[in-house]
Length: 638
Image 1: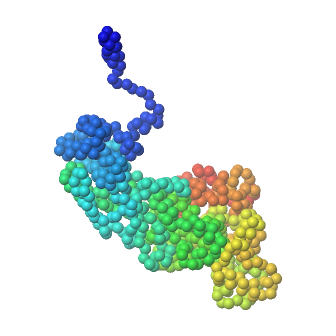
Image 2: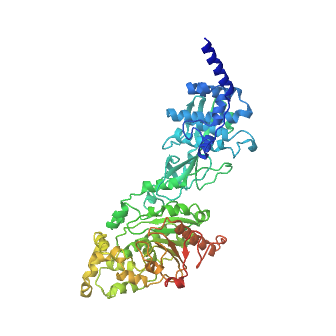
């Protein structure tokens, strides 16, 4: 008995000595996680929601029977709310419903979370009574709203008027079918993008704000499906909003009426106070992922007939032409595709000046074909596109086209900005074309391909990693062995045979048909590449070179792994940027992208479209990103 009494006294003494409050040191990471814990990041509630439950004496009930606790909090908020605590209660209801939705995959709970979050963000009061922008719960509420809508409406979103039955009562959502339009096209297959992760594009751009970011497909007409206008799989970045008037008054009533509103990224809403949330990079990436058959890169090299079958359009754009927007035509290199421009275009389109004055067109071609033939296809595709849009008379911006070519694509672009006369032909064939005994169609094809003149709409050209004097890799025997595997289009095969059979002097050249393909055409020994290199860009076309090199060595011996600097360098360009420590595929290099931006902005400045920027660099200067403008009069000797 005495022993037991002694133990009890000792226990009471210990309890009396122990402090009921303690403070402990946290690491920086733990401190941040403690302040930002929420149902969004896992199963733990925010401190605010726990406080609301504790204050209402509902925390034990939440731990034992969450659904009952949620109904009780909902009922008390409706009947006995206080203005001073209503914000806290609405946030708690949003977070608790979200957690319940995630636990039970309950779409109705997700919808309730979105409604309560919207009411928390948008009080029926003057603006100064809105949640503080410094309160982390405001951003959390925006995300509860976004993910709540994402899970409630599902994939794809069925954007029609609908009724919901929630524990708080019925909810009616109205949809105006007239809003489901984008630049004159009905939109369909509306899919949320907030839960998608992007890889393969260097930078991810999201416009923060309110609402659910989605991507939607415009429904094309039969004619558009045959034209260059819009890629079939283009997913337009859009914002989906659930909006309601007097949200707090409604959320505390027995019935809620709201509307679902769809807004494209390039459309403004009159009276919209909060910024809208978009995820433009993910929508663009999903478009490419849906559209791109990556085997086309290699099939397009080996099968020269690929784009002649009509299954793969050669000229695509990611948005309809808008009056005043100048085309930037991107031409990829060998065994490549239009998707290789994704990172550069993604970065450029985030520049407001670029986005407001330019649009991007992507040209694809079978890269094993003869370079003059592919260049002719590029010319014809651009001529057709410009004609479909009414020409430069209908929109002068169409007459201010910029061609940007990477590697072999740069050679195609050059073929559109030179006045070759008979120099290309004479450099390869010693007999004049009109002396050969050819069918009219063969003679026409040869004339159109090998006697190019400048495309009237082309104002400037940018050469990136372009083998102006040939690529040493193309001169390797293994590369030429691969080049022999290419199958040319029937028209090319027939024309080549007709040329070889047209004259005994040509038969003496002992040429092989595969030598007209792009691989041999880019060999430094090729008579085509030597002849093209000797022809300057037309004087009224502005030209620029972007030349990557590996390492810091002298330019005279530098290369990018495929092309020597000496081969990519040409005189008389308006600027030449050497991108150090970059390989041949430099399109996604930030220095290369910055230089393309500089060139495009400079064009706008020169004709007074935009005011000049300061500190934008120029010939003989060094850019802030590390690319070097080589003084052109000295470059060749470095």
